[in-house]
Image (cartoon, rainbow, N blue to C red; front, side, top):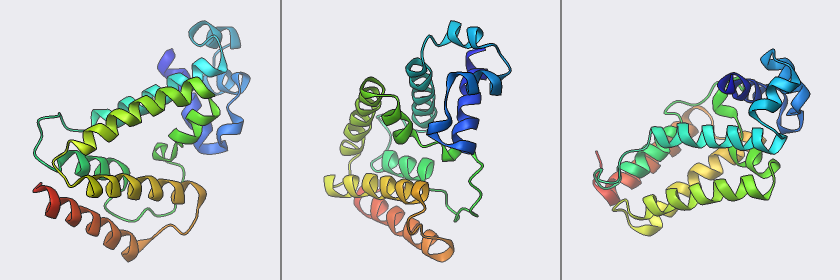
Length: 179
C-alpha cells in the first residue's frame, strides 16, 4: 500500500507539478480512502518525505561502492542523471520528478534530509580519486542540467546534449582513470 501511495504521488508530480500534491488528490490517484492514506502517512509532510527518500534511495542504488576505481562514482552520478542520448521532449517519464523542488516544498525537515544525503554524495564525489575541482564541476554540471530541464531553460538537445555529456565523461576519465 505504501508503494502504491508513493507511486501515486510521483504520477501527480510528473503530470501536474508539486502544487498538485494534496492528500485528497493522492488518495484518489491511488484508489484509496483518505483515511487509508493517513494510516500510512499521517501528514502531507510525511508523504513528501517518503517520496524524497524513495527517490534518493533509487539514485543511490545505481551508485558504486566506495572501493570502486577512481572516477567511477562521478561517472555513475553522470549516468544516473544525464542520459547518453538527448531526451525527446517527452516529460511524462518518472525521471522528471523534481527531487530538490519536492524536498523544498516538503518544508525545512524534508529539505534537511535531502541536504544530508547530498552532503554524503558530495563526500563520495570528493573521495572519488578525482581532482576536487573536477568532482565539483561534474556535480554542478549535473545539477545545472536538471535545473535547466526542469524549468525548460536553454536545455541542450541533440548534438549539443551528446557533445556536452561526452566532454564531462572525458573530463572524468582524464582526471580519474575510470574506463
